[in-house]
Image 1 (cartoon, one colour):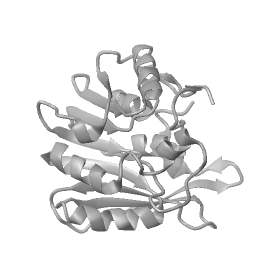
Image 2 (cartoon, helix red, strand yellow):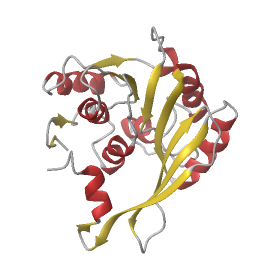
Image 3 (cartoon, helix red, strand yellow):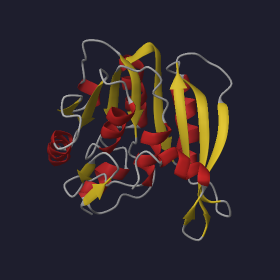
Image 4 (tube, one colour):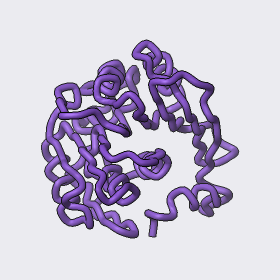
Length: 232
């Protein structure tokens, strides 16, 4: 991995355990920002989602980007400093479980560790990036419940099985899905990811589908429309 160039910014991810990939870019483009002025990216890695939020949001909005891994946090800070929004994104090295902001967030977003019950890879960096050893889902939900404003929204992307478990666990903290998008790499393959928005108000979620490839390497018009402000 290395330098990734987007339309308005570039990021290096060689010191981040969480590399730039479809999941992060998809979540950063998919989440609804509306009029959010105070935002939080949990587990920012190299900072790509935080910078996407900075690009999409009001000029006076602020983005906190928290990252547990020291090397990744340092690289995220470098990426922010070289971006068009060095004063808009604040990178925090630490645990979201310990975060104590002065006021709650209008928007919280997380591309989290995935596999809570699968076999661990041998590399410790990949363990942290793809498993919930450092941020179990129940601790993530508890943190979101504490940090989210009463009218705020939380956005997350997960594999299908974990998404179902997450919805059930979030309900215990009075967080309810209001928007659910089933993501497929190809229409002929099983669903790979679920994108979800949670709020404190229970309601019937808006459900949609998104497919990455139409055929071969040709991307669908829906995917191109969603990510068009970012990909070159």
